[in-house]
Image 1 (cartoon, rainbow, N blue to C red):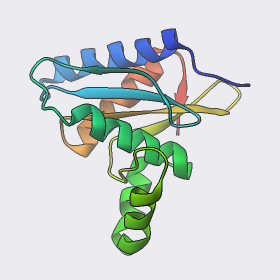
Image 2: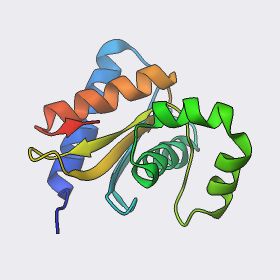
Image 3: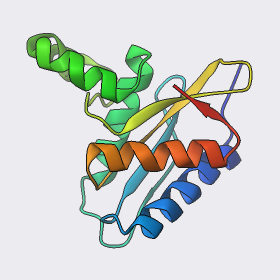
Length: 141
């Protein structure tokens, strides 16, 4: 089985939070999930509101569940709100189709998980997880 390690997941989060601090973004929550949308690692910065981890997990879960970035899902959800609402209420894991999560791939291009963030704008959330994934030596979709 292809997997994402705890060490890699923690590296993604650490690097993502460094970028958030360097850019002066609001306090963030970051979650890394495996290919089954199960959380491997997560962190909520001091001052981040209570729902940050739940939202970040939902974004990552949506990305892994549908096989595309949450940015693409946010666009699709605008055209099919009933469909996406039904998925969110029936999925076995958190599902929030909003910008801020991307898929993580290994060097062979295989999807090994997803990383999601919450706390800033969707663009800021997406930016920091992409930076974290890259810093950890992985790729993203």
